[in-house]
Amino acid sequence: MKKVPAILFSLLSVYGFSFSQPVIKGRVVNGVNSTPVPGSSVFINNTSKGTTTDKNGYFELNDISSGKHELIISSIGYETMVHPFAAEQLPLQLRIELAVKVKELKNVTVEPFLEEGWAKWGKMFTENFMGRTPNAAHCRIKNEKAIRFRYYKKSNRVVAYSDEPLILENKALGYRISYQMEDFEVNFKTGVTFFAGYPFFEEIDKSRKGLQQKWARNRDKAYYGSMMHFMYSIYHDSLQQQGFEVRRMSRVPNEEKERVKKIYRPQRVVTTRMNGITITPAGKIDQPKLLQDSSGYYERILQQKDYLEIYSRDLLTGDSLILREEGEYKILFFTDYLYITYKNEMEDPDYILQFGESRSPVFQRSYINMPGQNPVAIDRKGNYYPPQEIFSSAYWGWSEKMADCLPSDYKP
Image 1 (cartoon, rainbow, N blue to C red):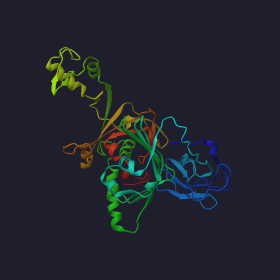
Image 2 (cartoon, rainbow, N blue to C red):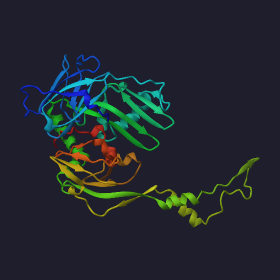
Image 3 (cartoon, helix red, strand yellow):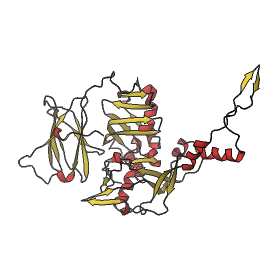
Image 4 (cartoon, one colour):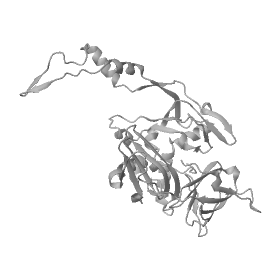
């Protein structure tokens, strides 16, 4: 996520401005010449609360809920601005100076890349950004041509970017999402996908009652068992009541595999062919012949993971993961990994098929960790901040994509 210099925002004291109103007012201008930037998108990150600036650059947001938030200001041709705030600071009066986006000089690069388009990488992008869940089949990006891709052959990774917000239509959950994409990368070498941005949610087809009922069911299904539901359960110390079992998990180096790597090389017999006949010269074996049992053992060890996973038997409570309380927020912190089982719902069959497995579904199982070892704040609704401090894998790595994403002000 981009960090915004504090000097770009001015907090103004306004005569008669009531300090009991949960409101933000302001004006968006060009940072160079102070001319207004009409039509700028101004919204609270990951919510359905937003607006656009008028012809003079002014905007107003009312009825802002409690908690910590990020105010996002974006306009085509300008750098995205992010203003963190808490509801206790309201009301706010802001002057926002947008910086003109500087085009990157293509001849000044650390690593050469190939500039490619949707035809080459569109399917890969869709699967990693929107996901492969049943809901993903009912989602489409309406301005896919705005997305461009760069392939870095040396590091074997793809980066996607767009100069305008992506417009997603999710007919499974009934949302139109404007997504200001800041980062997207798939690293084929490590198998890690990372994307970050700022979504703004709007309801679609509000008048159709049949669709409203269907969307309500689908939204609840997306919520229960999700990371938002999990964080809600931690905050209220109700993990087991909500269906979650949480254990600590640590990964330690597989020392036996490292030992075997140093001493064992599979036998390679050097052969040549002459006149259609294979000839094996004597004394051309790379290493002394091993006993069959030893060779089989070494092969099995080399197929193991580089790290061994050690699970605790003890179930954790929500309070045991809370470092401290700060007002209405609870500060979450843990080391190593959390192994999370959601026992109120089984895995989706599509999740099993993705890995080419033929087995019956089991309870949904996920892992989370804190790579930067920085605490996060949780509010009573299950929103956590900053979200990039927690990395998820296994079931959540599959399901926590944009096709199943809900706004932070969603109420199940």
